[in-house]
Image (cartoon, helix red, strand yellow):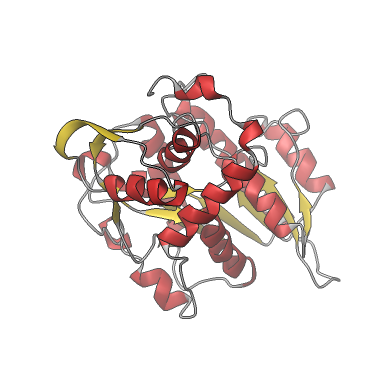
Length: 302
């Protein structure tokens, strides 16, 4: 199967995980200028090797944006089998590289091993440690494979926030929704954390749709690392209220931050949205879509 030739100004992009937080935003973002395919789980089972091969052979694309992942967070309906499922989805795509020109794979800071995090980790810190958790280990194996495979780039956001994320557990959206319903904003423990807005992540992805990149992996982290308590205060200011902020445990948890020096060298024109502006914009979106929020999901800290 020959890779698809381009006879158009836009790209034909297959987005996996198009119903998830990042995938849903990506579908909206790229449909404006590209031909986007975003099959549902019923339309394409990524765990089925034959189904993936058949789909790609009948739908050749320029780029695959791989956002699908087996979630392991505390609100996942079934967090088990992450290693098997994440690897099978990835390799079922990779083994059909003849059907596309480039694969952009979303990784995360989990590849560095949560027991060994240090502030502002750069990409050279990868493989100093093997992640102990299933999700991190699956991303580690994928990253090692990408290092040795042509036409694939891995993007490693640490924290991403924006519309459509799970507001029941994702910190910034959870804080916004609680403020909108006059409920205390809660933190288990303060922590320095790298959050990038989903719009900024998509702008980075847009670059790699058209450019190969000089490296195989890039951290996608902002210029400024924020404390969770600082973010909670930004949300409170955006709300214009005096909702209380409760921190359950004193002290600071381990910092989760990465260097973006390699990315900024690759894209010198890249400018990240100031986090205050991104938080305020997201607050406005939730305020305008308050009817979509289920207050019952805010009653218990998860």
